[in-house]
Image 1: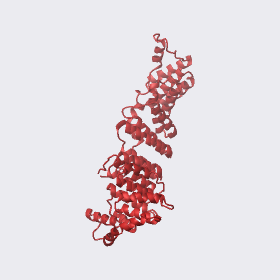
Image 2: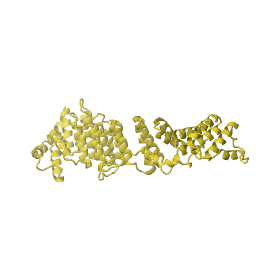
Image 3: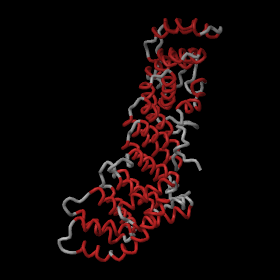
Image 4: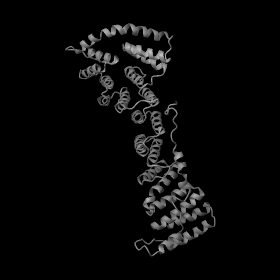
Length: 446
């Protein structure tokens, strides 16, 4: 199966515009009605509470003349100067509403976005647009500004449409919030964009119970393209909370490995713990990752892990049985493993004795973690944490890993949250996501 991250194509804002194109090209949204209709309503006596519309004599004459030209089929070029004159005469709110409607309707027919926008703004500024239509009007304003590449204004109108709770069959609140996030990110306003994206995701989850993979892909790609590590890591956590499939884990681990530069010199121990996670979630699949894992475990003197890795690689066909280097490592691991096991009591005794050094305690913690004796490993990591000079990032991270092994997921999540070293913090974040899945009984799928 192709990874949803690698195969992702961001949801285009233009597609959303296409879904709602009827709102702009038709009259159902804004509505058009002639001056005669309003004049007729003005004469009605049955609603004594209705305020009497205010039109000047000059405005009425100009309006009727334009109305006649429109009925006769005049084109927009002919109408445009007269519409400007009508707008100049529009002083009262009622006049502004009527002038705006006429300008907008003529501009829709003439396919003039700028004039449509001027008509729309005139209507909105009149204060006469019914409250229940404000969201619709503002969404049209967003569309027009977007087509005209006026991004700041597009954001303003879209936010107003959201605030006025506009929706239709194609556009939900969450989709509009996603569009807003795209606008922010397109303008390089990444803090606002990622915050808007998270709000959109939460809204989408509430609307339909799930979040489109493309939304995660769009945000993560934006983060990677712009080297925005914290925002990318935040989205990875949300992604893993939403989808526990192995391919999501595979992408997340790859992203952290690359973005945190874990293959650089000095980050070997953090990379080892990331590869351990890859093994545990079932995404250690490439031969080169097996070899990297074997090399790191060999250098750290973890013969049990070396042997298990090579055995698994041979069994799956991922590692070539004729590889000389691999076979050498297997020989060394087999030879070392027997003697290493006999030394475990001495390792434990050294770490338990009064006056034990940090090196002795850490040696015990690391060794028992490698052998899967998680309770002992967690105890020694906790002891090391209280000792001067302890490598805090490693100790906390591996203590959390041991706590997962013990099934103490809540404690592990709390422990991982304390890891703040640049190379280890994103690895701890992934381990924490794994602990949350385990705590919630989530099974990692195919």
